[in-house]
Length: 139
Image 1 (tube, rainbow, N blue to C red):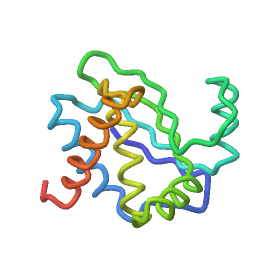
Image 2 (cartoon, rainbow, N blue to C red):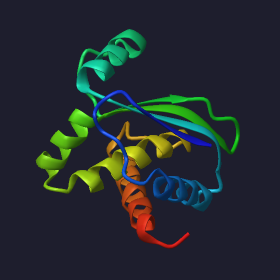
Image 3 (tube, rainbow, N blue to C red):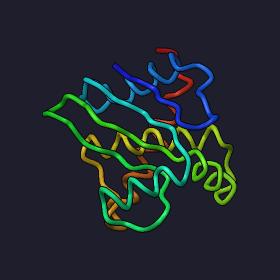
């Protein structure tokens, strides 16, 4: 089950399309979704989570809380819409493309992918691109 929670003015246009995409992305890696909770918020909200839970005092686009058990994906994914908008501008991509990248980035973390080294980051970026391409594939 995938749940979407909106703590800002943002709302996904077609949640079902995202459900199919995220589910298919997990299946390509041999995972099954147990429960994913996407929480769309603003910078202030996510900064407070970053400070309170991770002791980090900086803005970020996503924070993922991992409740995975084996190949069953569960987690809470907090996404700052403010950061997604700024990233899109900075990287010269559409908001929609950057949103998909951030959404799947959190799921990839739940599947064990990391971005803590240059090599891991390169692999993570390749996986993000691979999964974004699945968005328009008929499920």
